[in-house]
Length: 459
Image (cartoon, rainbow, N blue to C red):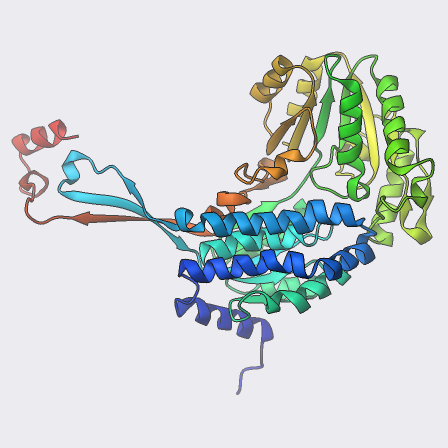
């Protein structure tokens, strides 16, 4: 009986044939793909920005800063440095291994699967792809169906800028993702939530495929009395309400020293007015919730504390106002679930020590923010764990290519951006070359005390 056609298996098989041909290994091929992605961000800016606006009402400046310019910079940086990243690296050969030479040779893992996110559907999809192509891999790219317009744009445009025999864009929802996870890949990178992350890991285990997970989580933000409160409010407001709070690295809640709660409320209120005007709903610079399901989820959080300002919801417009909550119980859903929306709870704590105890008593966050003195920041860094820490600002660590972006524990595993993306999709293959002029007899049987003594001295 003839085998029923399996488009997913056939597409992966085609990519595997491309990889096996050796086409993706030369540095010039990799640079050509990376340069193509960088060029796409410039030449297709209008089309991509329009798709982001349709999906998320994302303002052009936010689209450019966090998506288009970010990917252009990532691809250009990788293109510039991939030759050095891919070069063999000499390592020391001990005396017992002489005469000999040892090195590490980076090699691509093979065919990768990149499952993108809906909230930053260009950055979260093409960012990992940059690392895969820099490593010399082929890849299946699965954009999120939630950001449908951007998914369609990527499916239409990406094959025009990269080798279509090496990169396949496959659209779809749960059924398509499930079918893809049934295929054998050599690496998988998933960006999303922990529930799906567990499904991805379980599927990968069948093939012993290495997995990188970017899972988000609740990112706390500490504000102490020694902070510049005006600067803190401005930077927190920007980081929290960009993309209507639908950012995995947005400050999720504030931990402020006792007595600072009302002060921060008023400063944040002033910043919202400064950035979005008296009515943020009318501002062209304020995004929307991606769909009705997520709007209902975010709106439920408004019931779990006292609204200090904001709180307006317009379901027809997918609008939730920039909102600050106070008097929030520590076990309320808004304090135990990732908010992923424009709702910011403020919790007062006695001092920095209590803030630190609060953080270490919960799942490890993707990002930890702290606004305060240098000494306070160093204390937080030393006594807590987080995927990354940012002091006296929000989100700006993403502007540094060689700071790896990734979580730890419940917030994810593995990392990408810069050379770290290259390493995620590479294997550092150890290679040793031995000379034959000398051959130490002490390692061969029959063993004697004299031979063992010589080997001990050569360690």
